[in-house]
Length: 151
Image (tube, rainbow, N blue to C red; front, side, top):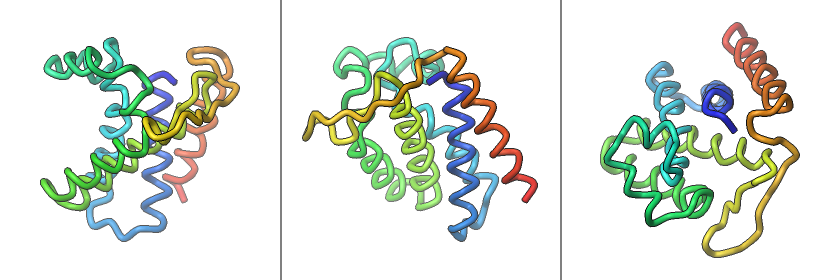
């Protein structure tokens, strides 16, 4: 998925989470969720996060794209470390964004192995990144985001 689609899915995940969780600072939470959607692509040399934070460019030299950083283990590690270091809202917000990235990538033909490196089971969908099908999904998710903001 493209970055804008990940952001739309992240906002959706954040808004749905806010409906069920007592978050003291909803705006901070949504910002953290949006930041979290970029974290899994730290293993891709040309990703938004690696173009922004040059220090992370070393990670793709050691990890393959959609490998460990596209697993639930990496998401859990982010949650535990950042909750301990910065506080629960930070860890949880980044975790929600992280998982929304993984779930939206599971809709693509490349898919995601949520249990990498423990298992080789990859969940794949029909969407090809950057095609009309992704654009349709992007606008549909954006519409749901807008509806949730109003209601």
